[in-house]
Length: 159
Image 1 (cartoon, rainbow, N blue to C red):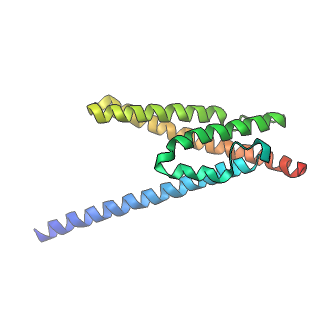
Image 2 (image 1 turned 90 degrees about the horizontal axis):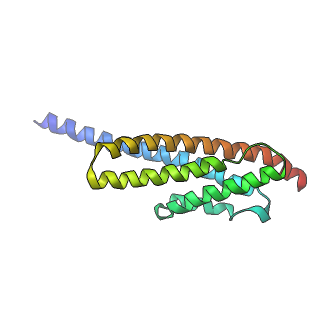
Image 3 (image 1 turned 45 degrees about the horizontal axis):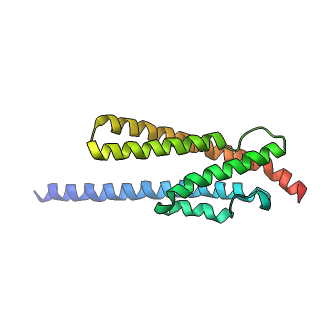
């Protein structure tokens, strides 16, 4: 019996360790994304920045999740306008930012529905929306990074 209890205890410890590892990796990836957003704000001329670049870090605070959704729209909108001003192609991830807000909002609503009813529909739909949200997040990250790369040489030339 002791060996069974020991195995169960070890499995629990391993599960907690794996969960902490996944959490830390996720936070590191999210921090890299926030650095890209901060660079996106800082790539804009000072008078066109929607807010100070350091404010993107408020997205880490759980109560500021709405700030994150508003922030990606404001950043992408400002990048889109700057891209248009330089006659470049792209939208700075603006369309994808709108889609992220829609998908994240639906995901939260489905999560509430699942908690209220435990219905399988909400679980499956929420899972699919989570995958869609991660894909959109990666695409937004890529488009903001591309916009920064296009705008940086022009910002240095005008400085």
